[in-house]
Length: 377
Image (cartoon, rainbow, N blue to C red; front, side):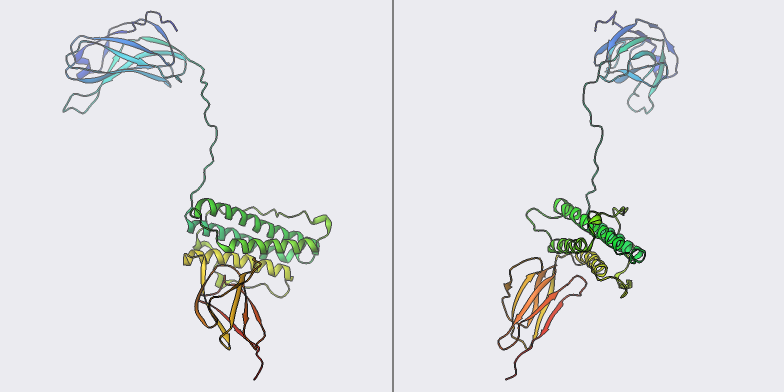
């Protein structure tokens, strides 16, 4: 963009105005036009030289005062004539900018900036298109600690459990409504669990660290409940798999959760499938609380048999094959992953004794004990 006589304002600033009072200096006004992104010189002449090395500026403002650009430079001592540089940013709004005021920084051992006024000098700024593509939105993700993660997931499940307890009575009398209601609760619990697994894998677990075993255990339990509900539901409602329940909890701490010791189990009027779902959610909450309180995804157990000396085979409920434990009963301390386990106790002359262990609400060490049915000699 060509400039019209861009040897812009010749500004006369009496030195005493800079250091003592605020007044108006005589200015030889030249009007110029500049395109955003360019710089133009602003010559300044003082009636007296600068008293010290300092910085001097002149502000150019639009008539409404909303947009400002500044001519600015460092100036040495004893300078009567110097040139400031007016740098116009690329995104400066177009308009007419008039120089009306300015200032200088204080000399050494002084603290106050000195302000001054100038007679008008005008710059016409022409804008340029902004072709840079900027982001228009952002996704904010909380980086939770492990305890915060466990608290929030336990709180979500507590809301589901409360919904089950409070709304089951009004859905219990109609089998179709009951199946739809229970299917929605189980579906929401499974959906929350799948989200929790992804979040734990991304934000909580260490590289190459396996996920806690209880995740797979509860996935299998919720899917089993949903399968059972689907088998007992009429075809017209089998696709009703998500409840209308909206989770409002994103981060709730343990002190806000109901104490498990104060909970009352469902009475005998509950259908068996409803009791199973209630118990599964209850133990799922207990798993999160247990991991938070112990800092472990395993539990300690004592393995006992009467009579002693039984061999032990064991596997997680969700697995297929059994393993042989390294020593026979009695075992004073054994460590297992936090999950449900199937055991078989085997002793010559005795009937094999299976046992399923559900450790989520048990105190450590969990006692795993059987009384074998043995032939009398």
